[in-house]
Length: 206
Image 1 (cartoon, helix red, strand yellow):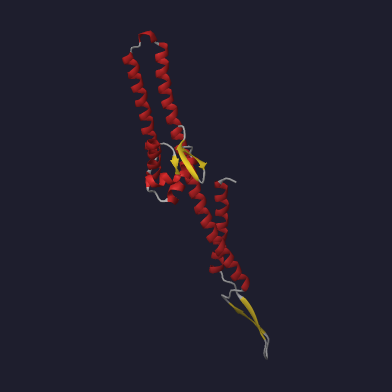
Image 2 (cartoon, one colour):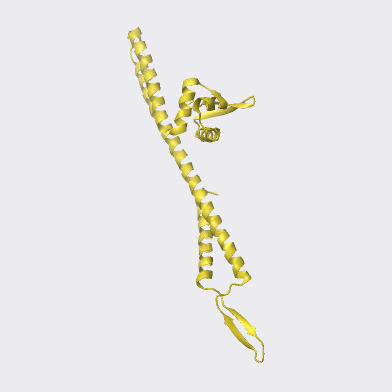
């Protein structure tokens, strides 16, 4: 079931609960009391809630609180999912654009007169490729924020390492580090795998 369908169901429960509570508070029931003495007569007592009314109001209050909580968490999860999808799309477009630039430059060199390429031109091409790689990584890092950027920079500079070593280098709290790594792993930016009793973390090939 999609998140939007869940939200619609929770909203329906929320509305029904509000209607029930409002109707009970605005239009309280009237109880008929039969009084017997010398003369038997019926007396109406207004604004008296029966056990059934109380149970119905408690149930409506519980449904109201539960539906509000579920709506909040479902909307939050939907926003996080949309944010992750946007980041994946941006990263894919960036890689595709850089790949086209590199491919275009390589094709130009292949189609040219390779016999006339000097050692200086070869070195210049290597420098250009290194600059392009550096530009690609710089642009990629700009997409990240906060702890994500810190983690990726450490892995770029020092390579793969255990999660404990990453904690020592970043000084990020373990719970926050684990949650951030899980998010990066879902987005395909890092990989984690078992290594003895610990886990190793490395950058995925972008």
